[in-house]
Image (tube, rainbow, N blue to C red; front, side, top):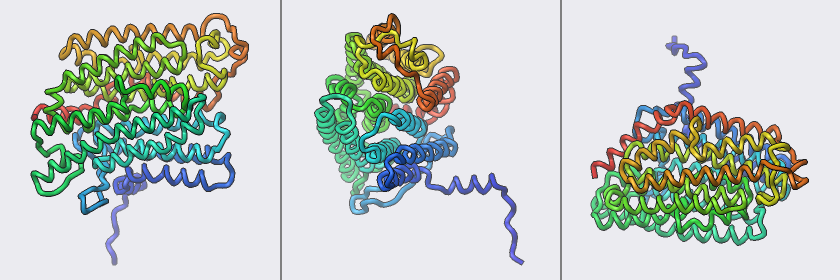
Length: 509
């Protein structure tokens, strides 16, 4: 008689299946499959439903990744590895740690919001639009998971293709094609120093060991000479500063906010891939140079914080105001990273996650306002709180989260960053505090002019409030903002072990 295996139950079988699944690869493969299905099916009206279904499946996979992730471990988990270009020792290598794992569900949730926000506004080539959105989501998730620099660079550059067509074909401004071309050219120019820096790292490893290496764990353990390290630091910093963006490389962002489709621009404001690159690659790969040139990060962060706040204060259009506000807020993230301590890192990562729902959600609502009114210029607004009370209420909440109001997810993030900066760079910390005062001035001032007072424009008086699908995504974003605001340890406990290892790596050099 054959021996019988012990009964494990449905939960045991499910747990075993989940542990054996390559979840990160499934995270990538689901979306291109959905894009192909959206494109191939004959009825265009099916495209948005297929895109939403694919994104919801991806959300389930992203949640499964978070469930399987062990927050007490500091290293990379759920690692998947395969040879890609063996002659150059380039691999398909993906994994997540405490810094990157929460970006996966946050990114998928923002893309779900973009799909729902585009539900009634995209009538031209809907199959192509939703297919491009899913491909853009694939490349974005790939950027967060890549542990090989060439794989990362592949996802980084591939993200430009869908963005170009999304902006040039569905932009809402008269100069949308110019905005798309400028964005692509600026990003391609920023990719040159990025690629050069990765190649220098690989050849430095080859000089020491005799073989090229492009995987991040190996490069983190490879020593570099002081001059080479400074060169790599500056090259990578320049490449990521373009995407972050930092002053004076920011000019594409206000242009995209005015010319591009509002839902797609929400992705650029809500997902700061350039700032993530600073955390993942620039500082840990060149730790000695990061310490030696901390003044550069402090200067860039301070200028961005102040310039963005002052520029936002001078705007008369809600979309352009949010673009400059995003520049100011990301400057605060750079200031937090310049301290290279645990508080600054935790605050920076938490602020980037806050951007996803606060800045991304705010721009989605401003896009909904533009769809209803035909403009987001303050001259054409006023009195909207009477006809659109839900839209006005959620936009206020998202704006307050961006300002760092206590009780929202922005408060613990900004508090950690400010405490870190004030203890290491007092002058920069005071500048950041002044910029936060300006932040309250520009947001509350423009919000009052946009939604209160008499409704002089009849279109505003008759405007429709949030539809059920728009309300659902706003309620979800608001719940996340408030839950994290009152219980920040839900996020901080995930970041802490990896953050401690990140700081310890810097202190060894």
